[in-house]
Length: 290
Image 1 (cartoon, rainbow, N blue to C red):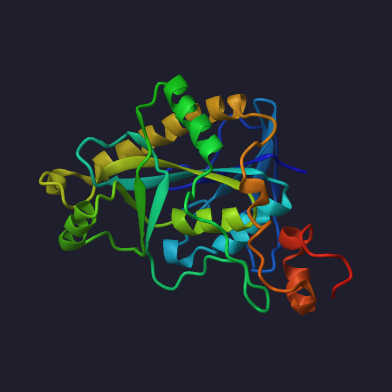
Image 2 (tube, rainbow, N blue to C red; image 1 turned 30 degrees about the vertical axis):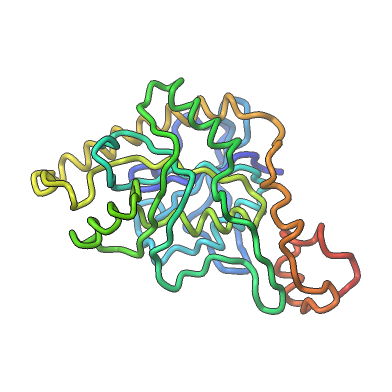
């Protein structure tokens, strides 16, 4: 195991201050290359792997992200928990810029993104009723309070395709649906992390109100950048508290998410698919079937 905790940095968070014994690792996966090299190091005595979601320099659109490679790379490193930081827009007046939101639900408005490792002769249906690890959610909630960062626990993250932001009509519809925040990336990460039996939590950092807000037109690029900068600083504080308080062992069900999810008879799984997914399903398929 090279790392215990994975950190995905979104807009405004492209590196992880405080890491010691730092090294970069480039990983190949059956689905191609992840967004960037993983930056490994020690933080508060724990081994951490950091990945810049959009690559350093912010070069990858949300629709272009290789989600499977990103999550599989963490799995290859031995990561058991992923803390995902992401910039979002707020759909509620009380969820103001520079607040952190810890959503516990997702709603999918993306189109055609691949969000599963399975197929090609191996069928799996994971439970996704509760997409966020409850144990990790509690850790992050406490970490936000310990860091003095205003945070709201719970709510629904609506994941849109992008890269353009919402129209006013769309934004008002999302509000009528009682959505809380809007972003472009986290749903696919959460699904794939569950299939990989990795605990996952989203730390959604509010940068602005979506275009529904009557004062939206008064918001300047400079204000958004100011919020991104402050959110990045707060994310580092929260992360330090979270890593320090992280339990050594997992007591949630994320680590056995595939136990009752595989439907294909073991002797019917194509050898190539078995080899490709060995890291994920090897413990559930009897040896020697292929």
